[in-house]
Length: 437
Ligand SMILES: Cc1cc2nc3c(=O)[nH]c(=O)nc-3n(C[C@H](O)[C@H](O)[C@H](O)COP(=O)(O)OP(=O)(O)OC[C@H]3O[C@@H](n4cnc5c(N)ncnc54)[C@H](O)[C@@H]3O)c2cc1C
Image 1: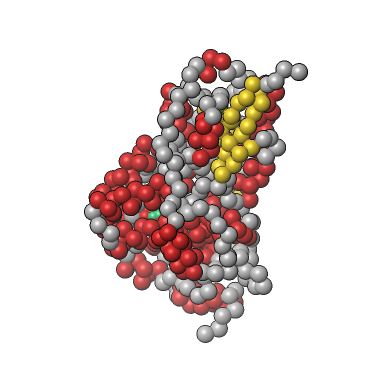
Image 2: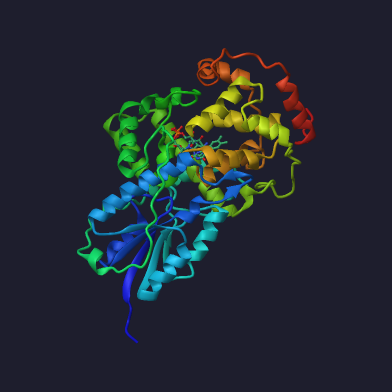
């Protein structure tokens, strides 16, 4: 039998970039033929009645894929979007001796997808975080994690790939691929930021050069584009790596100075790493009603009227309703609003956090499985936060410029709710969380 020709197949998911991309780098290293795939099936499906990937994020991803296709195309490397990864790999392996290169992710569906790749010869890398992945104790708090890694970072340098110089001569003509490259839908959504590696780098440079030292004072405001970095948009689909963001942060600090604000950007990026490593370690637990808790479970409600009122922005608490409207019309809400929405959903309405997380999943432009489900579980008291916390939406609104925000999204003056939302919170605390003060 004749030996089949070798073909390295890079499967892209949330690593839509050339820079610091371990899968692509290793596929190209030995100068063998390289072909790239994006599996469209990962954008399909629903959770608790919400789409796994809504149109805001889909458009962002398509923009990033189109840019990547162009960049790779200039180097004679094709990138095809395919509907069914297993079939595509079967087709390729009929003709070539294929080896797959991909980046590992966290999340149940993500791991199920990886099983399809593992039916073939694979090389895979977990590179979603700034830090090299390590086993963490999921029963311990974020502070415990932070203390440990900050010490480690002082001695261990972060591993980052040097920019990749590559060009594959003439392989386009010699590759014969019996695959369909699917056309990407044109979606009408307006995005707060465009998808793609170039704009990701531009945003990081822009924010760090102009606003880095203001971050601490502006990050909690409910509205305002440059009040926070917006790096999550690019990190979520991997247009830039977390390691590169860290490296840039250090670069800009050394060009100017280190401040509480610049440190705090790193601090928040550590939260991202933390939730990724918690999800990696705890497999599917953050998707369960019990979250990370071993011995307790809370009887969260799935009252359909309450759920619908929340999703329709009809709770009667203006700052909450404005947040829901911003999310549904723009694909964005600030971190402060995300906390208020999640707190109100679980601690005032007593609802099952997984419905709220699925709602966020459909609409958030920067949806990331670990950060979303990690934060929701945390707010729902089933993560690893030992304290019971409830946000007072009216107080928060006063503190973080909610008045103008309500005017912007509800087109009216903010008013005091006609019901006692604090009493509601107390009832949920006693009846669902069984905490009596
Ligand atoms: C209920 C809830 C759901 C969330 N869902 C997501 C999600 O799907 N995707 C997502 O990326 N973030 C999520 N977050 C975290 C946080 O709200 C966003 O990362 C942040 O608002 C993104 O804006 P930014 O990039 O301007 O953040 P900045 O304030 O500028 O922070 C810098 C970076 O640090 C990371 N970060 C900041 N806060 C957190 C946090 N609490 N948890 C994890 N990482 C953080 C992000 O990567 C962010 O880009 C959620 C938070 C809550 C409370």
